[in-house]
Image 1 (cartoon, one colour):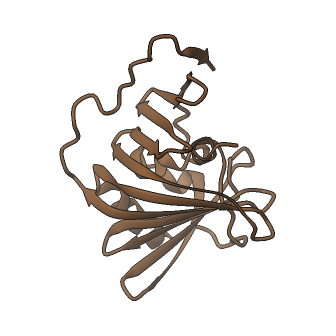
Image 2 (spheres, rainbow, N blue to C red):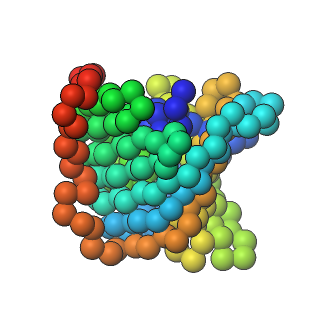
Length: 207
């Protein structure tokens, strides 16, 4: 499975968390997420199987803007582009000359991208949340409350108030680690960044 599809539709696992959401943890995470109305930066992404063997690795760039808009571009040689205008998600695969368009599922448990760009006012309804802090880094572990989530556990780490990395785990123990670098918050976003023009001759799949 291609890396960008995994970011959209799967997750990386942590050890199971059984604690219930603490009101202070929820409030703090909500505050950290909401204070960044836009985010931009680079990312590096690595996927490991349940035994720790590396499956895939990629780098790229991302731009996100509330509510629910994002532009997630994976660099060649595994180039792909995922764009959301807040209502629909478009996935462009230049190798296949294929465009896949689907309705954006607004549930926070259905795509980690929405945790960084979506409406987080109901985050406590979707997850049990615990946190810990050390040396300027705050880690939040989120465990979905519903069984239809695409991931079992998700960790969000913030350094000096900005997202630093994410780790997701699925129900077979496959982990995806995403490290963000050069992150900037609340800067203007170029017009049209969350729109995608379908290339001439591309195959289009509507889901």
